[in-house]
Length: 405
Image (cartoon, rainbow, N blue to C red; front, side):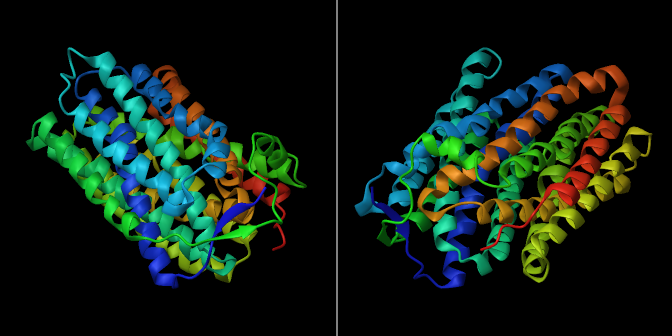
């Protein structure tokens, strides 16, 4: 079966501008669900255990690999194969957020959760198409910087959807805040609507199918890489999930947390992603993974400082900024290698299979973080997260072998 592949006709900066806009737009609702809502609900005295379980709303991110072959195989070519899917999901997100604006969040809490699950599903599906489009657009030499743009776009989306929405919730009503977010999402359709995805026919690659999900795991060296992927997300997810309620418990207001976590720290994450994107091409993939993962372990250890009582505002800002800056670097390195391990003809499936492993492990870590924190405190959960981070560094050092291009 012949498959459409994105043709590399765009200039580098046109590619980066398009991908940046897409990653910003798709991360706004995700940041709202996973960053803003836990803080908002903690303000309503929701327990740490419940906040940990809220991470189950990310299940679509875990299982999106199951429908990634459908997005690879089917589409409306005259609209642009992946462009068609991105337009559908982006418009759907704007409409879904607008509908959530009219819910009474205390009396219709179940509907709220179902709506947030739908938002997560649409965002996860859009991520499949956007990653596939990126793999087709970027040459191997452009992938380091391109993934810096991806992670930076995610950080900027988090600033808007996490910190920005928390700040608005602090001053506006629920309805006004969500209608504002829906408007931003619908306006963000414009760049991809103007893009013309060029396709050519490929007869060399196998057609996307559900068998592809299994074949990805059977590639030489993939078993070792999957071990690294499974470890990579546990420490950062676990630490950040419990850092949010810690800030509430030390007395910060919703607006202060929105500014700290949702604006300043994610701004640092954006800078970290761009920094990594500019430096990865000067290192081997293994050097980048080892270095940035080791730094991430140190950043996670810094979370213990507030847990030990160092809760002055400058200290909280320092910890959050350092953690997100290094996380931006570490995730950029990871995304670059994941892209290297993806075939262009089945990009949505190949990349999504790998990212789903990271999400699975990260969400498990986040889900159990509340249980661990209630049992041994915030310091205990940050220590456990640090141990997983160091195990990741060792796994990369001993198991990772760079794939030849």
